[in-house]
Length: 247
Image: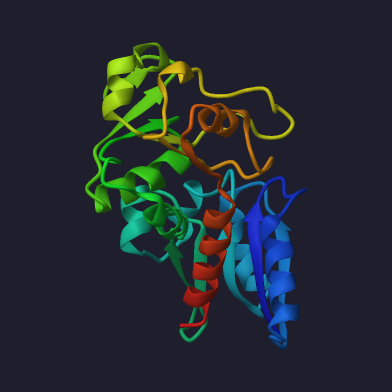
């Protein structure tokens, strides 16, 4: 029996377990299971791998995406540049398990964003500057799309929400929310931008997927903009993890 799983803490709600359990059943993938491994500290990953000899691959969620890198043997290029890992392969062919980290969030975001891009989508505003934002920045660099990071407090290399003007929004027509604003249960929260200046030229992408349409997306849609939530990104990154584990 091959075992795969998710590490993080807490793990009360897991898209990954539901997704992979369903995948194994639907595609009749035999002798595979997906389990949750709630570990408080990222350093516990080594003990987890040693004590679960059937474990072949792991997904990583908050709060361990950054800290876990210190306990891995190797990182792929994307994970190294982004500074976060959400997928790990476990190679047991040597004396000790060899753990390699990947970032499949970047793949999921890129593949779900690219079909939506039009010729007038030349620059992006990124709301938030946490771990998810780093994967978004990595993808935008790959696509040669300049961006500005928007945050609530002054920090070098960023702008404040109060700095978003009508003129800026004419130039920056891709809007990406990487914050938890609008996520259940805070349905009434949204990035504080002047929505009245948006129009059909704007593309809004929200990494939040629950609810399906956040207040941010609703407000952009009301102005005629194109909207996209984070569900496809999530499923694409999960499928990319599976491909990596099968190599």
